[in-house]
Every structure is written in structure tokens, then in C-alpha cells.
Length: 127
Image (cartoon, rainbow, N blue to C red; front, side):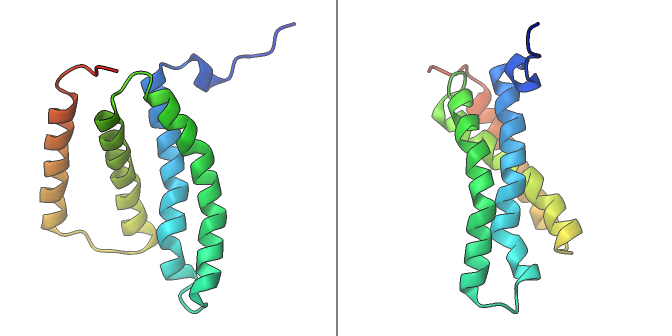
């Protein structure tokens, strides 16, 4: 009897990269920013150690994501994909978890990122 194939193994490499980077960025965002709310009364070393513990899980997803992604994307495309995913995770985190307020300038900045995505992905990768 054969073992079932994990879902990520059957996905196209770019889709696998997107899924792994999305989960990686959830961990990264909490590691980098949640301590500002949850550990604000604690010494910075406590926040740093907690963040490092969370960041370990981020790296366990981010490193394979980049390795898989680099098989189909060039380095610039991979980096910009990471940034778009990071901001896509960060905005809901900032609004819903940290209770931050969005401004119109955030929209204009997001549109600049959309333009960057267009320019970096308009030609095929050459790796």
C-alpha cells in the first residue's frame, strides 16, 4: 500500500512557494511585531528570545520556499513575491491584531508595489 502524497508535493513550484511563504510570513510578522503589543512591559531581551523562538518556524518554511521558488523564478521575482506576500499578511495583522489605522498613503504605496510586480514579472525568468 502506497503512502499518500502530501498536497504541497503535487502543487506547481510557484504555488508551493506562495503557500510556504504565506505561512512563513505569518510567523515572521508575529515574531517581528506582536511583542510590541503583548510584551511591551517586559525587558527587550524577553521579547527578543520570544521572537527568535517564533522566527525559527518562519525559517523552517521560508528556506524551503525560496529553494523551491528559485527553480522557476529569478532572484528579483522571488524577492518581490516575498515582499508582496509579507505586506498581504502584514496589513490584516496590523489592522485586526494591532488595531492600526490604514491611511490613503498606504493605498498609494500598495499601488506602487503592484507596479513593481508588473515590471518584474512581465518577462519570463531566466534561471
